Image 1 (cartoon, rainbow, N blue to C red):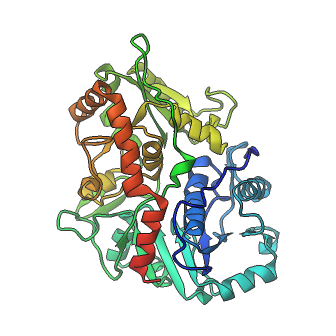
Image 2 (tube, rainbow, N blue to C red):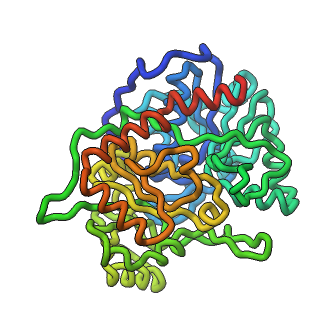
Length: 425
């Protein structure tokens, strides 16, 4: 992660709600040191700080970190530590973070071993962001332990199947919240057993994303709708009630592979492919045969495909890419679509905060977030084309609507104040 000038924090964004109660965010910033993950962590850290909490970041996932420079998981945590240190220093969290290495005899970095022990003994709240950490005895010293699930469906299925590891993992928490805002609704087919889930969504620190420029195309250069995504992911498909539900988004993109031929805009995918390394430009390096074929096939059907790793190792390059887009077109996981979990992407929330309209696959989120201006949900290709035409007919209107939705539904002060209230802190 390249060092950058520290961001200015808007200290007047929200009044203090809880004085100086101590709160720990458990995360996976070092384990996966790419911009989308880092922004997600920062929104929670800063959002809770602006509510008046005494906030710390701790990483204790018992997993080796990923090094994007070498495109590999490694026992060497140097890249992870450099990234965490730079990010925390830049955003005002110096001396408020700790990382435990899997190797090196599970040594702590950042805060010392004794300070970490003291932190867990004195903290009031622990937020297990992305549920990335299996809680250990020292974590259980914190009285309020929040399981914060950003990827619903699979955990609920595993619990319904009686998977003891999932049951024990969730059972170590005192409260459970989920981005699946439709869980438990009559039209949601996700089984909800054993645990009650409070609905939540991604908090966004809006002043970090506001953009004064409208990137709409000229008559000679069409608008450009983009997204940032992994292409193929494996290992989390499941069977339920005699049907198979998939995890990887590439299945959904391929259903719409002919979209660029009908779309009144350039359609661009910034993809992180498993064998593609980070590069300074947006070209590909070291792709395997299957991924080379995927890029070739997408390009042949009119998509522009670029290397997401060319900007995803730098927070501000990632943000520039979103702010430089006309809007986002993206899909959701089959699991969320067919079972109607109500999930909505944290990356899409950032597009909205930048004033960039979003067109995304319907997961049932329209019951809690308004659609039709700024956000459009779709079930078929013709819905996408109609949404693009509507946006481009009055881009400034839909850009304003996108930002207004972010302010009303994703502003960190509102999202986290509701979470605090739901939990009863």
